[in-house]
Image (cartoon, rainbow over all chains, first blue to last red; front, side, top):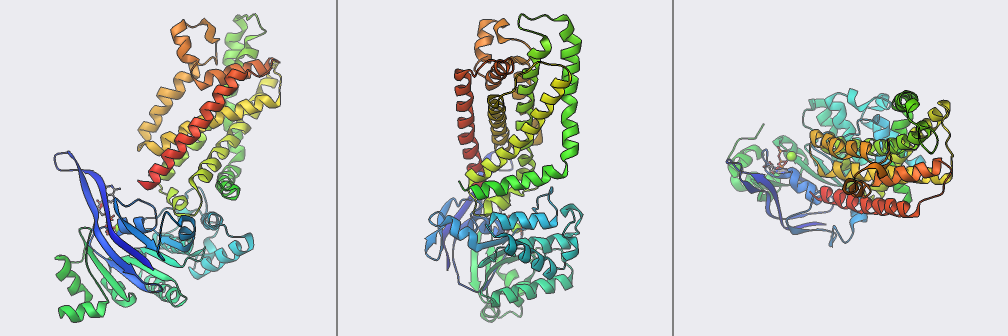
Length: 251
Length: 247
Ligand SMILES: Nc1ncnc2c1ncn2[C@@H]1O[C@H](COP(=O)(O)OP(=O)(O)OP(=O)(O)O)[C@@H](O)[C@H]1O
Ligand SMILES: [Mg+2]
């Protein structure tokens, strides 16, 4: 359902001698992501994972290449595609002048949800994320883990059909991480397509039906974690990762 | 553009303002009270104008200045939202259009500017200024704050650092504050300077406001110039917004 064709992103940059140059963050990536799968994007720091997600969600324009959602390009069907997508960004990006509940309400309004639905959905997600008591807190006062949970709650308010999670479990304690894994599996069972970037190999191994491994902006391989191991005769996805990217897991 | 989306963007600014409304109102009283005291009572005593008192002369100047400053400073919080907190991403991911976002933000700035204008009018009345109030007066105040909100928005989309944002204030707003017929008539300037000054929007806002507060009618040429500035500002801001979303 998501087709990515020869996608390239070049950023303006400067080299060692401070001369202007280009940084190729995503290098000719071609990929298909199926409806209702949990798709992992695995790669070391700076591999281009976030850049890829930003292009897929329409936040930045590709330098070259095409993205199709159900056969239509982003530009052809912008509003409908945007309504369908949910994004959990890598960094915290709340509105600092709004409290927890208001941040969620702003999101719900931006996606055109009606008042009653808005209220119910916000309360439901807050309690699912164990944030119900924090509804009137300033977002500045939440702990790191609470902020991550709120990011996920916010992305889910408008019931997206495709959810992008950019390193959703970074800096979370094992219990919360497990809870988020369970949520992801539950969402997938409910028909949501999940695209997830991660550094944690065990996360990809546990959750993802298929995983893309990228390094230096290039797509190196796409397969299920099991097939990767079988193909390369390795015991774990971690070994596969090290073999394919030529480096230890960046963490 | 979608009115509901405009309302959403405005709603956000409104709830933030509502929480601080009392503080906002008090803080907005400081500058006009100082200006009225210094220029109206202090300097104004010794100045005789052919058309009434200096106090009556500078009240519309203060109003022009104020709607400029409020339009600009209310909107430039989007700079930190874009560069530092990154929460403008929420809007660029959402299905609302750039037009709706920009319009909602401008309306938020206009609201603050209008509240502040009303405070100045009340202060001026207390100081005993003779000023005529009319719907056209508010039209000009709105138009002026729209223009400077757009300038602020454009800068916030284009510039990357706080220092550069502060320079917009130093190199654009501050000179206009002094030169654009706010504290004196532009007719007294040498003709070359006068020509330059009369190209600037604040000059026309001051002239319009002065004419209206002294009981005169609308100056159509000035109104046209302000409208042109507002329209151009909208398109430039929109362009800057779309470009920075696309990186
Ligand atoms: N706006 C930008 N301007 C210039 N270069 C950029 C920009 N954004 C990303 N890059 C560069 O592109 C490359 C890929 O960055 P990206 O953030 O996509 O990596 P990532 O795989 O998400 O890394 P991480 O695991 O650290 O989050 C990096 O070399 C980065 O420096
Ligand atoms: Mg990243």
